[in-house]
Length: 226
Length: 226
DNA sequence: TTGCATTTTCTTACGTCGTAAGGCAGCCTT
DNA sequence: AAGGCTGCCTTACGACGTAAGAAAATGCAA
Image (cartoon, each protein chain N blue to C red):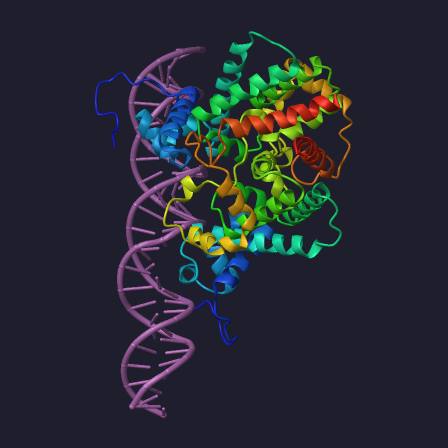
């Protein structure tokens, strides 16, 4: 089947074009829509043609991480204006990373799912360690710090609840209403906290304020151990 | 095709049996081996027969979470011996949760992948809030605390690197060696930190000590805000 | 016991996925 | 001109989740 209907001098495929098409699909239709056939379609090629530029799906996903992290590292590097102390610098860096993640809502899930140790990811963390070192951290504390921050270093954190994804009519939602009297503490908490911040970005109440609270909690804790 | 070769008075299927079989498969062969056909095989039934007891695969995974969290809540409840202050109590609770997670290495990935808000998960967090409340926390601070802890409240935390999964011969490993001179901080850190703790449990260096360091950092930070 | 209705299980089949195997065209080199 | 790369395509396979409905097992009334 000739997908290329006619004319159009056909831009040759390349790893870069494949990866960028994949990212575009993930951005618009979600990570689960990133299939070999779909990427091929977007590029006016057959799915099997991609295999000349990408080893397999795993390699494709690794490549997507590379593209993402390249964007992140570039964005972060562009900022290096007002340094300040290590804490302010790391804080800014991580919040910028978060900005990038918010542009690609699939990114946290993808990064969590792979443990690939891609160079760009490693490089990002190297710079973080550099910031801490120049701030007086021992290597040992910097190491601890990376663990303590975890995925927060990259600008996101796992949210366990996300009603927006579960959708309405969910049965477990009813179960929780039924069990409400067995959840005195959460009921109390949620009823007191006016949950009226509609600016929720990633996940449930994982808005900017919550993210920054946790980030500062950790950074301040590290500061005290320095 | 008669799967039931002969005799054997056939134990009827049930949601519980299906879920337990699924957990057993996940424990032994990993989460990706949990397929409808595989579960059926383990129970001496056809894949489609499971659909009488489970709505679909999503429901199955939710059910697996339920089984897991039931085990976790039971284990946690069994401990309620020496209470101590809120910090010690929460610390113990979370480390027990971690114990359960270590028995089911697939659990963190599963919990991260779903945002289902299952009753058992909610209940677990309700108890955590209860501990904080009785320790003098405002609802507001308890809320912040849940966000700050994130998945760590359940006894695990996202590890970004996991060479054990990537396997050897990986190309990106070579790339990193090549880029080593561009990673002065990490190279320095890793060469100084004698990475000779072979007791690594989940992920890379995410052994007990690292987990507890981060946990204590957060708990101490909260303590100061109380 | 027989008959019927309900509950439980099985058979068959469809569409989607990743991808193995090999074909075919255009280009480059000798 | 001949042969070999390089890049893309065709066909096909096995795995997956699951829709639709047939078949068997079970429980209950007569």
